[in-house]
Image 1: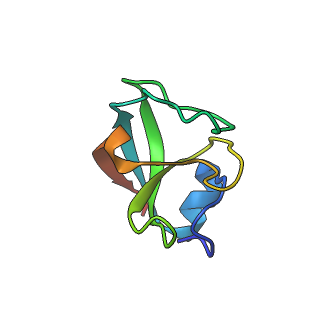
Image 2: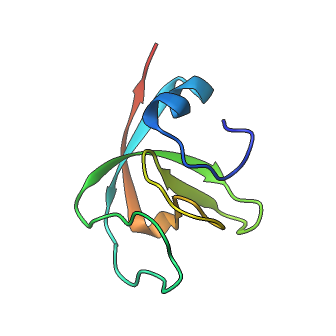
Image 3: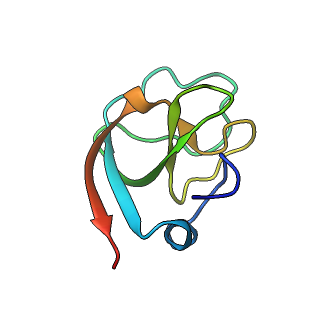
Amino acid sequence: MPKYEVANLTLAEATRHAPFVDYARCVDADQRPYNHVGDWPETGRLYPIRTVDSRTEGIALVHVLGFEGEAPYYNAFAPHRFELLLTVWLN
């Protein structure tokens, strides 16, 4: 996993930290926070993700790989917004 709990990772960078990629479908793209700066998922689309425990939030956040976002959450989203569909192992 990444050294830091938040980062804007590409797919290639993420697979250097762990030999798998999770894929999840966005099920809730409503109520975008007013202060969110960066990419935002679309309901129904499939995304490569990495789930990382957040020390500040106390829950696992979903990081969409390839998304760009600014601090404090970068490309992290609440888990209720996504449905994990599959894990692809790269070995």
